[in-house]
Length: 191
Image (cartoon, rainbow, N blue to C red; front, side, top):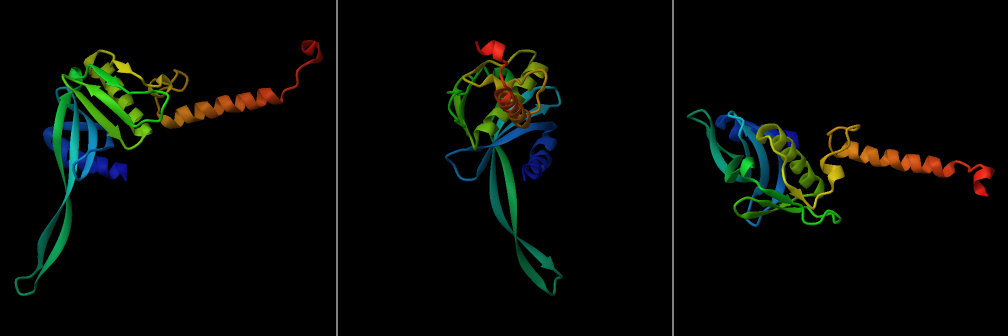
């Protein structure tokens, strides 16, 4: 489903503006419709963050010939940017509390923007994308506070491949602990 959304937003909203959608997450907003926090790279290598609102509109379409005209209902999604910022203007991303599974975080521009993702993994996915794009296009490290660094910057052995790699790393550690607990201790070490 997310790949279809990505393709549709890229086709309808970002490609006409000569931008490439890099990452997006669904967020919770008080107004009606679905909302997304998107990260896109412009043709001039400027990185933009934007809130996109998806609103469903119902249109009636006339089909058939002049003699036998029928009306059909068509559901069409309309994407509109409601807020836009430059990644260069982002001074701090605050995850609130790294020890709690909280999908809410703060983005500090000239004002603080509260964002509530639909899940904690979505929050970390968008922050990983922002960190990577800040390093690549802004030539500066993004200032982060209150995030669990193992989910933001995985170790070099596992590289930056997302949540699946972090989960496999945890399983690998657990397997090693089980194996070590099953080993017998030599008698010389017991005394």
